[in-house]
Amino acid sequence: MSIITKLCALPGIYRGLAVENLDPDPLRQFQQWFRFAKRTGAYWPDSVNLATATPDGRPSSRLMLLKGLDARGFVIYTNYESRKARELEANPRAALAFHWVELIRQVRIEGIVTRVSHEESEAYFHSRLHGSQIGAWASKQSSVLASRDEFERKCDEHEAQFKGGVVPLPPFWGGYRVTPEVIEFWQGRRFRWHDRFRYTRQPDATWKIERLSP
Image 1 (cartoon, rainbow, N blue to C red):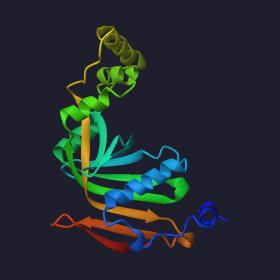
Image 2: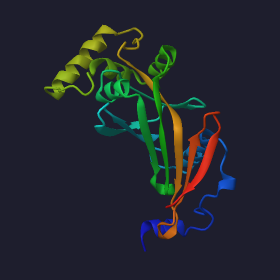
Image 3: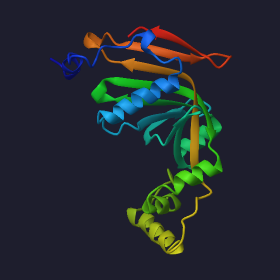
Image 4: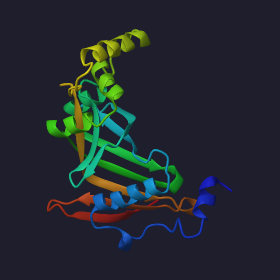
């Protein structure tokens, strides 16, 4: 018996999804699942795959951490000179995918990307550990690095530069918000008879909900 079959056989847990039990707003539905994933001890519940693409359609993806969520969308932070940021600036659309393996759940998001405000980026930056703040200054993210020593020397230089004071927000660092146009909720079921529901934003800002084939 596969691990998925065993998990799905647990009484009272994997009963699947029904449209009448879904919130009309997918962001509120996501928050319900996200809180549940945290409460049940899912491993790194805020881990999310961010997929970007160049204007000519060359894709790339990487795992990040969700750092903000409200009615406007999903927020991640990065170096604005990194590969992901360059691609987002040139082609401001992205896809996100959350996978909570313990719950046999996925959420897929597609949307428009914009930078968050300077104030939001600054507030988040100053909530980070001091070492992470120094690392943001030292790293030329996605550029070729000659050695680990080179990076650590830059960390030491910035540590000395800001010693005893507040580490300012780097001008090349901040957040992006993915404002969703499509959100899909995927619940695993026995025999791969999964439940999938797709929300699509309508011109009047309401959401259309459709069941998809497994």
